[in-house]
Amino acid sequence: PMGGTASTPESSTGGSLVVNHTSQEASPSGSGGEGSHENEERKERENAVSVCAKPDTDTDDGESRLQAYHTQTPYTAADRDWLKSGPQSKALDPLLRILGVGCRTAGGEHPAVLVCYPLRVAQDLDRSSKKGFSTNKWNPKVGKAPVPWPNTFWLCDSDAIKKIGNLEHQGLIKKFNNRFLFPELEKDPAQATLDAEKFAAQHARYAKFRWSLLSDDDRAYAKTHGYEDVLLHCGIGSLRIVTQVKCLHLHYGHFLATNDNLVGEWCQRLLGGKKAY
Image (cartoon, rainbow, N blue to C red; front, side):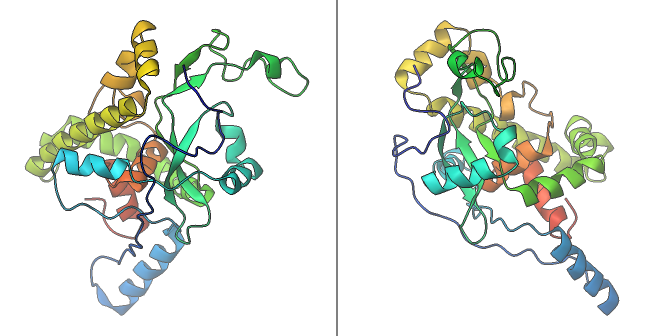
């Protein structure tokens, strides 16, 4: 299984790779006088990330939204070299197979979100035996056999990573999670309930897209080795509970690549100086 080289540019991913990114500039919310307006604009400039999310489809139709998942730009040799030169080179598994770029920085120069193949080589034993390579990192003790990589959309823009990290430090993971778990405690329980239902549907689309990326041979391999559950039946980043919020970077990367993640959308609004909801 798993033809192709990990972390190398893909010339084909089984479908057309089409550029489809438009700039979306956030505007500050509220009026509150000239001083308030200036403060909001300053906050927006400080928090803004140089990344453009895909345009919204303006529809709740699941299949229409799923089409946005397939809109990517190629992962090039220049992208690979840029990634290797930055801090994300240590965070990302080097044996991962990158299929394309789900979202680029506003100028289109660098990747902001990578689209990753759902299986990866567990460990390159030949490489890890050499000086300078770890024998334990990324090693689930199964040798070179492929194992699941459920994080389909990987946020790799350093500026966005830092600013989303700041949101995490404000306790927003718990806040967002509680909105889905206890909608009756929210200011608008009816809307919070709808949000939870929408988020559950987004989990399902993420899983459906991830499974669709596998070749026929790799689907059979996943079923044989017990990986079907985590790759097909678990949601965003392999979350099993559809009301669960994990890492905000995970949800924000999904949002940028597809415009189909409510938590990521809330993060985008906060970075633009608006209320989350």
